[in-house]
Picture 1 (cartoon, rainbow, N blue to C red):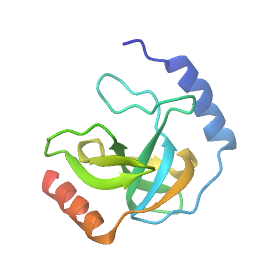
Picture 2 (cartoon, rainbow, N blue to C red):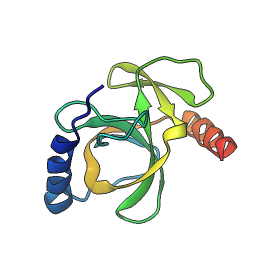
Picture 3 (tube, rainbow, N blue to C red):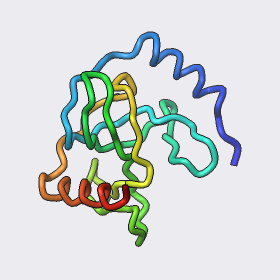
Picture 4 (cartoon, one colour):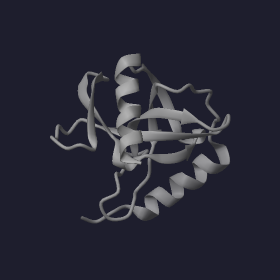
Length: 128
């Protein structure tokens, strides 16, 4: 598959220079510019290379751990079902846990249920 690295590089510069810092909390779900990645790393989609993400832990006002979400149902220990997100059944891709700057956030979707969030965090801890 041909990837659009040049288009992403242009958007990345805009996000870096002009991106807004968003206030966020753990357990929130956001649409996020997640990039064009190498190989089988999870990519964002669309013109802003976006994908919904779940905030796992904040480290500062600007940096947090997130896991991307997917609407592709898979039976896999690294796909943790979390319920409905923006009208689609979603899973947290815990093997794609990563640190991001909050300038990547586009808009907030809402909060994940506390119990489901705790189960997702336990699955991440087991992975580590």
